[in-house]
View 1 (cartoon, one colour):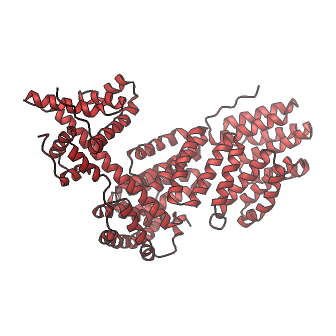
View 2 (cartoon, chains in turn cyan, orange):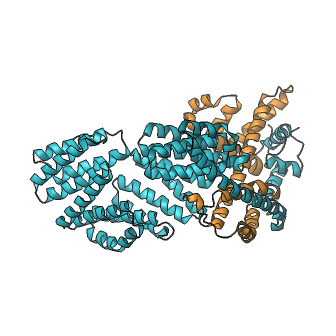
View 3 (tube, chains in turn red, cyan):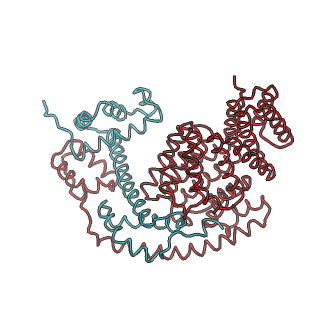
Length: 443
Length: 175
């Protein structure tokens, strides 16, 4: 009956949604009458009293004990997962998938974590292997129970990370349609909710990279804003630094050099060069390139001077080549064309020797730009012919080759201006990340 | 070596838990989480930390940030359940075959009064809903996209529930 007042306790349980359906109906009916007394009680109970801190002790003790046990088990699982991973690698590719999907022994959260970490690592060196490992991670995550993942949130988060890693690995190989399908699975999991906050940030970060490659800059930027907000909320400043660096790349590719430089400066404030020397160096490298590109070559030169020890500290050949390339660019920006020419030639030859055709093509075009600036059209013509001949026999992306061919023809007719060289360079950089692009000769 | 081989948390878990305990209690108290519900929340967060220690640089800030978010979600989830329960209750009341005409008309009047206190768009939307319209029909009639009708409905149910619990509809005097 609408006139029957619910008790204070019933009202409180109603407020918490903890009454049986019939009682919920009955209280709702009563409240619809606008009962002033119940309204007063409900209003008073709206802000629940702050429980005494000591009332949490028992619950915290129980959780701490369980988590301490789990930590020991996780440490064991982690060691075992390394062994399982090594064992998995002994099998042919098709059998690995079967083992991960069907063998109870391979059903381990930590194995999935190892697969994700290894796939991520392989992305820098062997993209096809990164895809294969990520597919295994997806399969591994798919057969894990909630219990094995420490609850529903852990299970969903792991699955989302596995799909995101697969999407990212596919992106790196240039297979954007498949990458989009993988990220659709991520989107579905994110939309369901209940993902750990840190994992949400990680998967959105990877999705932003796909958007950036597809030149969906606004979407990439929006996603990274969410990532930034999450890392701020969690106080993970090194991850925030990485996210800001990611966002700076979006700005850079969208042509917003000022935005790119501002974000890189913020990222550099947050990144620790001792903890993350590679990421820190990459951010510095990008900042120097952006400064140079925006005409502030003197500043770029000064920063390059201070950054050189970091490249040398890394010491690997790729980093030293990147340094040399950047030195060429900054020298070009300062009008020291001879120095730039020497640097570009060294870099191009080294890339060719390493079989890094695409980078060699880009360095060749940078070299052509320097030659064109000096009015050395015969040298540009020769360089263009050499470059085209080299790439005619190599497996280079068709549209990239079309762009190089166009440049070569222009050089033969001695109409290859610096602006044309720059347009072809820009296209080659874009098409590298987005193989679906088509080369359209400039008007 | 992969990142998994480089744990970032140097202190032992036991040490860390001891250190963070007072702040955990203060946080749960501040968010008024009932003690019996803290176990799930805390366990989820701590297990995530155990699994991801290699990635987390400042575990205390991470844990407190994660728990803050979970406490907010806890109350959001409670509110969602309450709105759904109120909605289900009203839908059932409206669907009940009520023999005495007086009861039916009282319910109609009370509901109309309650809805009358809501903003116009909620009034229109919930009136249609409690007349038995499906969300696709409501979207078409009120000019919302299919994607947004559920969100708007949720907001309107929240407004109705708040109104019932805290402000309450004004009862009109019988003529």
